[in-house]
Amino acid sequence: MGDHVLFCYGTLMAPQMLHRVIHGSPDPEPWQKALVRFQPGILHGHRRHRVRGADYPGIVPESETESSEPGTKTSVLGVLIYGLTDGDIYRLDKYEGSEYIKKTVTIRTLCALAHEDGETRSTSERHLRDMLGAAGSHVADEGDEVTAATYVWVAGRDRLEETEWDFETFKRDKLAWWVGAKESEW
Image (cartoon, rainbow, N blue to C red; front, side, top):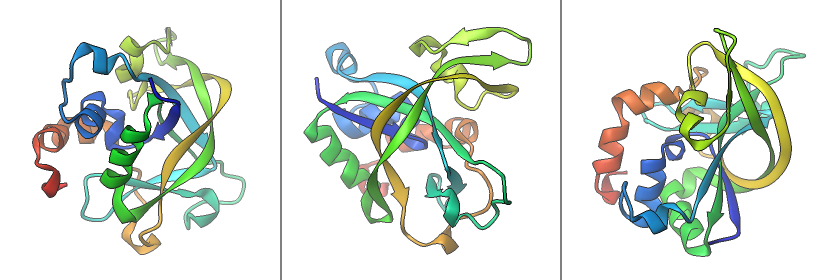
């Protein structure tokens, strides 16, 4: 098991996409799946944007967002991934390419999620899908601070839309293509 922790907020939140990048298969061997652990998290002070003409998002610090109104706090919901090796990070760096830089950030873990029906769910892996982008959900409790790496957009503010990138839309409309595509098509 590796020592690296990564905060993902886009295509890599889908476990099959992460495994495709680091293991070469969206459904690797059970022992490979067991090497990494997922936990929901939130990055404050940043905003996630759709990238023009792309299926993936970019995040920028709040101070760089044009639409932030004074006193408005921005944050990005995503996934902490624990147990990544040096080789995994190498493959992830190649996947992210030159549009991003890897930066160390402080993430708050998410302990529970309250739904409109009042039910609170734990942050176990079986609820991860419900917690990410679930309609009518909001964070009920933040947990510990975790230092992690993440990829921050550096390819130009003009390429970012003001619209928030939507994980559910990506999963529904694009995930199957990304998981099955050749690496040269990414």
